[in-house]
Image (cartoon, rainbow, N blue to C red; front, side, top):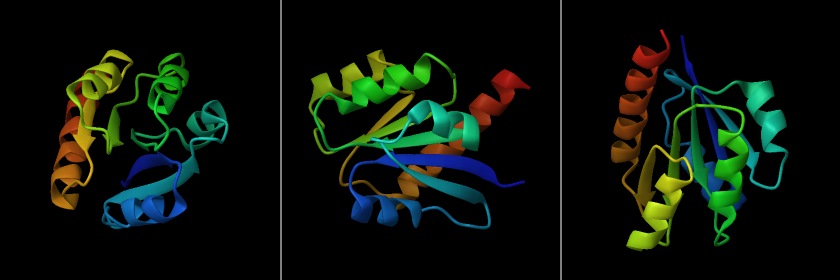
Length: 124
């Protein structure tokens, strides 16, 4: 069974590239804009994991709080602002992992698989 990943981002070009990072035989990818109704996306897709890639400072925090009000789905935040404070803020607001940009596609895939393994054991 393919695992569902909701990819939330601001930049369509970066989002397309990010979506193509995942093997289609293993994952079903659902792109969404961070400006869309996140609650609707959570209910519609029912993702196994979320990759959050926003460009606007503070937008990560806003989207994370919307998700955490309704779900415990694992979240990986990607951000070009890799300062220590940004990482800590993302983790404090509900992210399960944080990767600075640019990132390695293979490392992102490995982190996704690890989070999915852990979450599968927690909720089964």
